[in-house]
Length: 319
Image 1: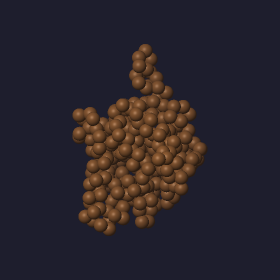
Image 2 (image 1 turned 90 degrees about the vertical axis):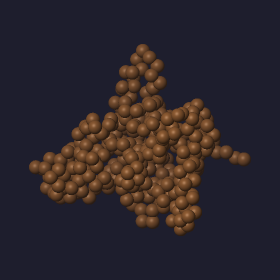
Image 3 (image 1 turned 135 degrees about the vertical axis):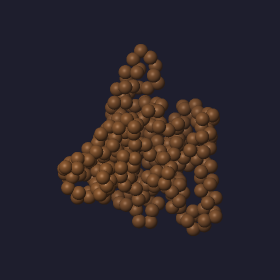
Image 4 (image 1 turned 45 degrees about the horizontal axis):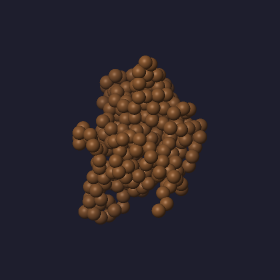
């Protein structure tokens, strides 16, 4: 039986973790190999889920069971969907820095930045290996937002695995091309998320540029499943500069701005993505750090902190 080189590499990498058994590896293989089916089932958009409701519900239950396979540590019994597959909102500048790294990075156990019990490492081998993939969430919709090719897969072994198994829907891009995709999506009002998944070796593997109408994670978050973590910032409005043009209202994917309200920015809803700030024609908006919203995923700062912590001891991180 022929096994693709990228599949062997993915398996080899999973064995290094120690905590990954056959079930966890199989989950990762299914996710990467059939990501479009996986996501369409997860979002309820798969034709079988829609057309054959009883069978669809069974498929969905099986899907949920597969995603919970494994888990040898006691605390994994309480790990839910949002703990194992989730996104961290990142500002445009943070996304830029993530796709322009020029050296391997090892930043494990980022509890303060990634507030989930699973999938919170940033371990990047060959960070300049970047591909753009047709968004599985958009692809599952009948009338998706365009363009489709907006999901960035970063580093090995993910780059080679996705490229080999989805050659018709993925292509390698340079760091400059990746930057252009992120910046164009930001102008469209779409939010950059750094995505982490247990099946993807418990770590960061992608930057997705998301719209609330298509994105499964954003829809789940809106309906009470906390799949997204704030950037650590919050939007502030200078009401003297604001001319009530409504650009920010139209662009905000989290419905956090109401120009008719006494406090135009709903701080509970605001995730600090900065899309409104970047697109405000009057520069009436700004981002401000809010400790209550968690720590930002600012890769250069995290690398510097890791270097400081590593002085004189083995911190398990390197950069």
